[in-house]
Length: 153
Image 1: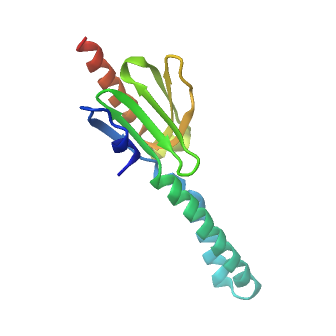
Image 2: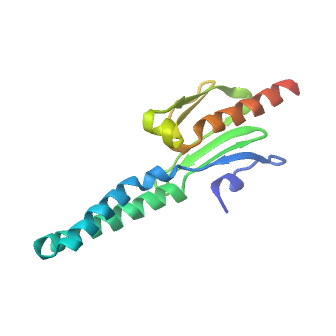
């Protein structure tokens, strides 16, 4: 069971989920390309390609762990985000306490559809959660839920 399901309050339901963008696998893919080109060269380059394969495996494992252990959700009551497996960074802010959700995107992020979000709540931290897929959609869904909570008061 995921972190989000384990931490839902009674009667709370998930309205939107987000994951990390596939861009987290960019470095393993680059190293794989380098390793394959070295291996095809033969001789000393092939021996170096074997070392590059080790780098591919290590960076691939870390990227996969980061991708699979990161969760982002908007419920009918809160905004939740969690990254990390051993060293965990999480935020859970009630919709009524959210002051703003900032989205940061560079040029590549705008083209490929990823960016960072910063959820700021009253008295809360402003830790960025990076490389989230469709961050503008995440912010829009959060704003819709915040508006529906405020309208129901």
